[in-house]
Image 1: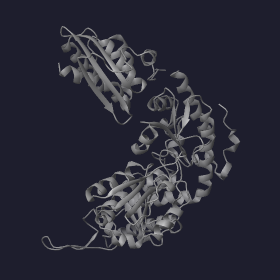
Image 2: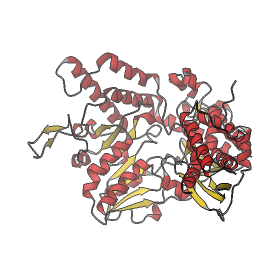
Image 3: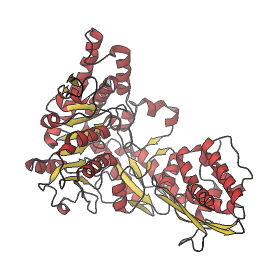
Image 4: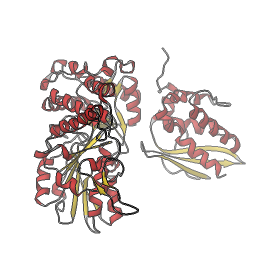
Length: 143
Length: 420
């Protein structure tokens, strides 16, 4: 039987121990953008730390469900070291991957992001995945 | 989990397992295999008698209502008005003319807000709602108050989630033009003491609207005893079809109300140019357009079905299940019943679990065949006062039994363990 469960080990690991998550302010960030989902009360702020046109680091803070927190954590890992252009492409790929629900593949997908694949089966949770990515994309557009 | 034995399934005289046989979806649909449906406050399933009523209508007597002079049209009209009559009797209305078919409870409340209350509101007047209202019984009042410079006042809740009437001493003040309250909270499950409140309001000549969307499926209801001026409910939350609801209005109030939807079937004489037109009598005045015949007869079939099961027995059964669920859930570490364990509830209970987002909780439960709801339940003013953005909610129906309670507790416990 195919395991349709949303809660893959990788997702749970990122939820329990999120990477690049701040408890307080996103101190020293060059750009900060926020995403809200009033439907479930999730709020995420994404901060970009730039160096020579590249993303030296991406951090986030806020509250959300396991899918939202894990997706944010994976995003900050996947974005690190990329140029703004590369990062925007990654955002576009993620959007496409979730909008279509099938088909579309990520170009050069960081391995952990594959753990979100199961969420594509649950349209009601797509917004949980994409909340931080939309804030991230918004921040990238202002560079 | 220590949940009381299954032999209390029939406490209150309702045999849920046998009732379940009346619901073809629950018995036979592939998606219902192993399903514990505990989202009845969102919508209920339909017994065979309701489905048959729809089929019988379309295969036996479907036709135009109040518009035809041939036998089929006359039969359609007779069936439609008979449905109104049966629903009026179900609610205890003095006459079938006090009952207007609408698309939903939401539409019914909006009709009263816009068609009755708005024109009567002056700057400084007040409309009272409670902290526990669904958006459907909040937003229409908020909007007309804004438009007319009136004030929307809130009856706050006490620590048990019950109306704090002592804390609202101005409720029956001369400025109050309307009190709009739910019969049962769609989040907390508390039942409001509406009879006493309606009696006091009547003595002050203040109309009361009751949003009965969550109560009508399990609380015996008689508007002549309750003493409200308006009452709104929806068929799909009481085992009836979707897309139809009703507005009860005391004859005098309906006579004062303006129709909002204008068109066929509600007008006597259409004036020339911009001249005034004259409306036909109540309730047809409020039912512009071709009526929902299949919806109406199936709605009445649902009311008959509830009467046959006996609302007192239903009420006792759902209270028993809700209490058993509350008791078993509170044993789980980190689980909080809202607003607190002692809250008196019927049929609905909301809860949170430490470190587990309600959406994750509902998803894990869903993966185990337990259908519950997560979110703000269209009650953001209440959520804000609870300091929460979302809760998980389980709500019981006539086909639920202790097996469903056990499954709920198991599912919540497994979510707790998964996110430890």
